[in-house]
Image (tube, rainbow, N blue to C red; front, side, top):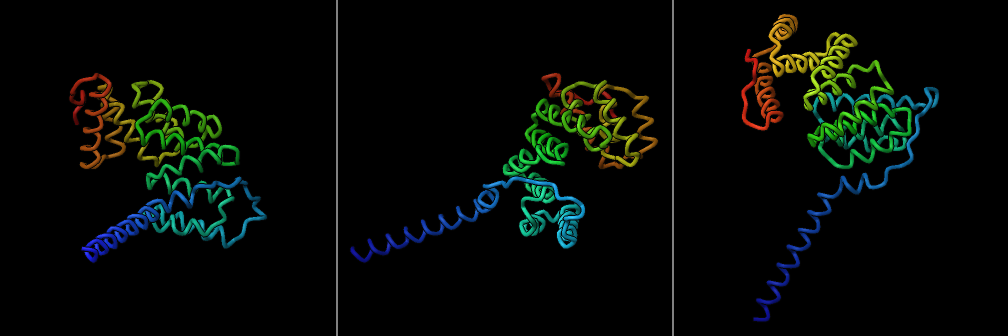
Length: 240
């Protein structure tokens, strides 16, 4: 009986140790981002070329969708550098980590203030908190009015809230600022579908030639948006 008791106790102890180790592993990212340093923008003459190169490589990993590798590598860059902090915040946001908000908030008092508000808006959008997203995107636009990304995301947030004229304005500004901004164009087409504007939809389709996959995604988004705004199941008013 004593041997059995000891065996069971050892098994229990082993399980507890295993659980503790697993918990430590799960919380590793949180511990790595617990203390956000005071951030500063380095002057162009003070930037280490090796840091610039490493940052570029991390950005390439992000573009390629290698977010976990990008996160691992960004940890080796100077944490107090604002450019690195923005990159780190973007990676954490894409990984859907709550720590991203702390880095964006710390960036609000740096030269990347506009990007900080844009990032906070994107986080709000992940939660479908479109009013909060709009507030942050508007702050970003006020600080960088000619940034097509900020205009495009503001237009999308306004679209989600049914503010169609304001949404159209922002999306058209984004496209004129960046004629290759396909995301803004697809959102403008979504707006035309939701508002049953066949003329605008035809013009956008002729110019941008959406793929079948894009069409299907637009139809689904249109139905979901109309259903949300009407409060009942609804089909997209303009089917393509």
